[in-house]
Length: 543
Image (tube, rainbow, N blue to C red; front, side, top):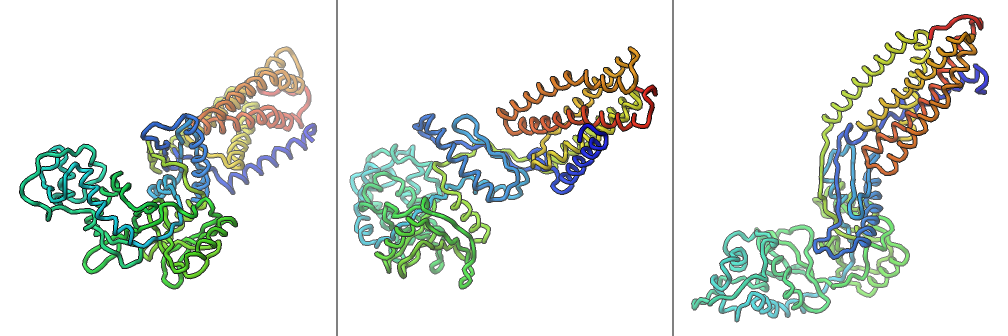
């Protein structure tokens, strides 16, 4: 087919039409630097530096797989997710409009647990012991010896919080209870100004819960963060916060649940999760389905605890705590609350399906590229490409005349093949990719220059026109092949070991090299044969 002129022309037309259709139907996908979006650098959280390099490498591999699944389900086109070293991950999301939502999906641990809600009896009985533990932890002899001067002047924040003075919303991260020291207590009894842990907990209207006033939450979290308080709690019991605040009278509270310390089931047994709305109460919910083994465990446990409350805990917070009415099989649901939008429920279902992150990850670098900056790059690239092509066309026609016109026609076919090829394989065009495209245009022109100079040499020694054309293409073949192969190998190495922008450059350069090789040796030669078809062997040609 390639040996006849008709076969050559049919092949060129077929490839051009296919490439043009790919370009028209799919279009060129634009990268982060052209389309706008966000660039994140993630790192495994290891504040104490106890993880080994091998453990971090294994952890980042698992994080990589989970985040890829989340981003794919989120619907971002052509995301770039790449490991850097053994403990960092680069995530580039082009075309993102809701950045906060994307970061939430990337960072959320989504660790799901199922725990039994316990009665408050044992916990309430332990509160007096917990109060004494707090006193001892602060280095005091007794509650009645408490006074504002018993705490070091270097720790005024903890004084204000414990004794009710100042701003109770002070972050617990600002307080270090280990540095509190004892001084001489005041004679005056200031017991009334002290806020013991037990007085902050009000028995809730739901079994197994306490109600904590929102203004007291920082102090309660301060107490719960003390190791001494955790050790003084009843064995195998923990206190965990509910998700949503509740109104009781004129005040706002948050539930604090008494739960079993160990979960009887975790999200590892989750098979699927979908978001929807409860038609009865019009509230968002996530319906989930467990694996066969998880379903058996769930069914057995719920069958033994009919009438009890089952806490569904997500990332350490009780999402909901429904009453077990009957034995539950492999299906269940997580109620998100009436004020939760369906979009948030969809995001939760997404991260649950992808699985929980094996460790907390931190965003150590964040960059946002606006679409206006991307549009500027597109405009600049378009102008540069048009000017470059115009200059190439003028120089080729002015210097090589008829041969130059044939080369320009082949160059037009080359451009359609490259852009159509990029659209066909779904490649993403970036600013470095535009540079690679322009470079490959230069290589295509260079190949034609080699061929035309070889034809001139053959004509100079008296060869006939057809013979000179055949000899010119044949003798230039090895030089063109060597130049294209070495550049292609370099592009493949860049793609294998480079990062996102470098890979974009390598993809367009590789596609351009293949197209330029085909254009110079096949398309241009076919145009020459078509031009010479109606001419005599002895007719001259302008080269």
